[in-house]
Amino acid sequence: MARLLTPLLVLAWTLLMGASCTQTIPKSQFDARAQDKTVRNLQFTNVKVKRTVDPKLLIPPDEPYLLGPSDVLEIEIAEVTGTLARTFVMPDGMVYYNLAGGVRAEGLTQTQFAEKLREALKKDYTNPVVNVSLVEVRSRRYWILGRVFKPGLYPLRQPTTLLEAISGSGGLFTARLTGTTQELADLSNSVVIRDGDILPVNFDKLVREGDTSQNIYLRHNDYIYLPSATGSTVLLLGAVAAPQAVGYMDSLTLVDCIAQGKGPARDAYLDQVVIVRGTLDNPSASIVNLRAILTGKETDVLLQPGDTVWIPKRPLGLLETTVKLIFSDAARTITAGEGARAVGSDRNPAITLPLTQPPQP
Image 1 (cartoon, rainbow, N blue to C red):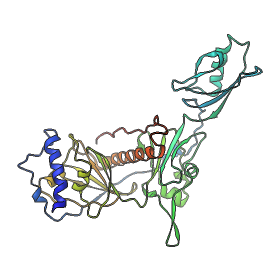
Image 2 (image 1 turned 90 degrees about the vertical axis):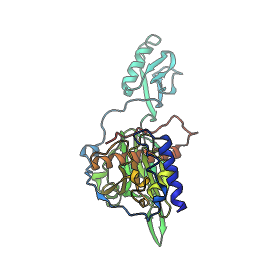
Image 3 (image 1 turned 180 degrees about the vertical axis):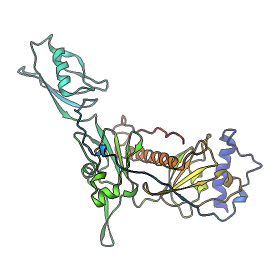
């Protein structure tokens, strides 16, 4: 009884004191004592998802490399002693070299930049021949995070496939269990995020079956995340005060979980809380009326490790669209946390990850 009352009172106080007028539950309707009932298991609906890799993603990019901030260059004026210098593209896109002052390099190929630099040096040198070499790529990069041996940020120096990226990070974590080697990455829920969207890559087919139709080429700012197969959390997302991964305890309920996230946000829509269970290729969902639970009209519900709880801001649209948005929100949130741990705030505070909220369905 006491275990149930504590999180319920936290949520009730949040709703009564901090919620907007459309979300406030009158005190006369809230009766925490009504929650002294047996919790119930959820009924789930299978969600149809279409996940097919576009053949265009399997073609290596053939566009020339364009210089960007932090790229390291080596520049020399041919046959002029003492002009060899190593420099880099500044954050403003400029390169400062010799007597030329600042010359814009961002967005140019090496050849184009060399020509611009040659023009800038003409006033001080007669028919200069400028050689520009790209020493180190820093402006194009990708993340690989989670259960690999060397998670972190990697330069995208050349066309790189997903398998090459996994191999370059040291490969997947494995463990010797009962005499066999087992992967510690959950391939069924591993993702590649590009421009805020999850690409339809099936890691199970790619890694276990060698299916090359899943071996896409990476692009600048791609995020690869391979979660733990042994993790025991519930992901709490959406209109909640403190979105987070909640450590799973025996008999964790929806109310317990949301209470750990400090309750719903002010603009939360409590009538249709979504709980997603399963894999990216075979998800199922259940819609729960949290308002009815808090007012004692319905009993609380049990969660399982790996569930995702998502509180919307408005009534839901199509369930398929909603689940897709939830997966994208979950992937971005987890990847941001993993990225911060991989890099460390003191090592490179300029690196950020996209945490834009997904549109509401």
